[in-house]
Length: 357
Image (tube, rainbow, N blue to C red; front, side, top):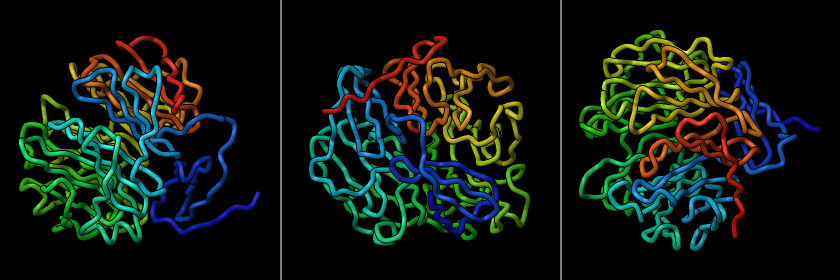
């Protein structure tokens, strides 16, 4: 087997999906691309549950996007009108849930008005992203008019016309370029947080300007170095919005003051690479995080953690999502092991075969 070496920019050892059955391992500034083996199932990189209809769920795999309307009994591929670009992320407009956005690798964004039956390209203003980078995450501002943000490897982009045009919003984010995830304050939508390859940035004016909020997260002067901390997951407590959790390449962090200071938690987790996180929508004291060692659950705001891996064929977790329409239901997407569902905090995960038509 021949290894392919690429220069990296994070100093920690990481293992992340790259393409189909390949993964990336990085250490000390080098990335090694190797074939994955031993799973033989679907790799699920993103999950979006419908905010109102409990039986409707969307997933993104390395082969595209799929939708179920019957609680997982059957799945349909939703490709019509799209290019062959790899899909990386999906977002459902919470106020217009038939409107779906897909973020791709090197081809910008596609939008569907009809729940994924047909897709329209939405690329104006995304030339940099189409040529060189990926759309990593999609975030929506609650309200009566369409308002959506993208986290991309070329920065933050905003649209308020259903993706017809995009504007770059990076004022104040000068030390890094890659934005991995966005989180919008559900009570004060002018406040947003951006997880980046160099920590967390915050805006209080709707992304017009950003300020680094890294005290306790990254030492001063480290943001531009290979020792900076890449943020891979970022979630806001839906009730106490000054409380956030940041999953990183090397640990889990919590803030209780809107990002002014961060404290490392979860040091007892068996693996400190955190790829995803999700709150229980009815009880934000209940938090799920996932990484290379599986899913972990806290019921006391991150003070203590328990593994929750029974039934998982793969413990390499790439995506977590809690259903708002079906309280107590959590979905987990794995690297090579498919999609799983847990109901009401039960002891085991239920496999959901992606028998797409």
